[in-house]
Image (cartoon, rainbow, N blue to C red; front, side, top):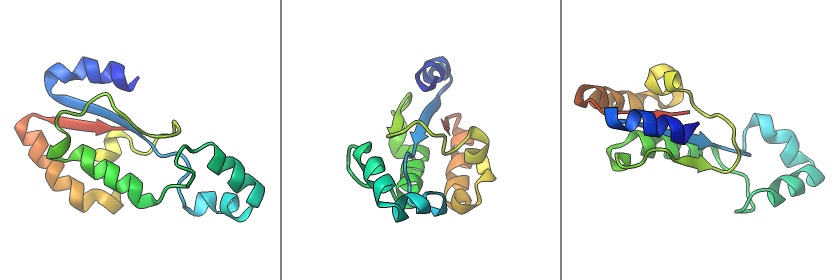
Length: 118
């Protein structure tokens, strides 16, 4: 779906990318970290052999929303297919990264270039 949307919206200067976070160290994955068997199984399924940190997702999001990624579209960042952000969240509804993204998004909106991560 990411590539199809990227192809459809590229002529309109809209970048579409997908962030797939996989196993990230959060309260939701605490039970995995505390269970040795589950942790081993999880880590075996991850090519780098470790769970991600929430900042890994923030950094990927900030990169995809930045000017440095203007040529990046149709990309799936991460390992497992799990939705991290929706276009509505990227457009100012995600409080933890709003401050950093909002000014960049407004500049992109004014320049006619938009980026969506989902």
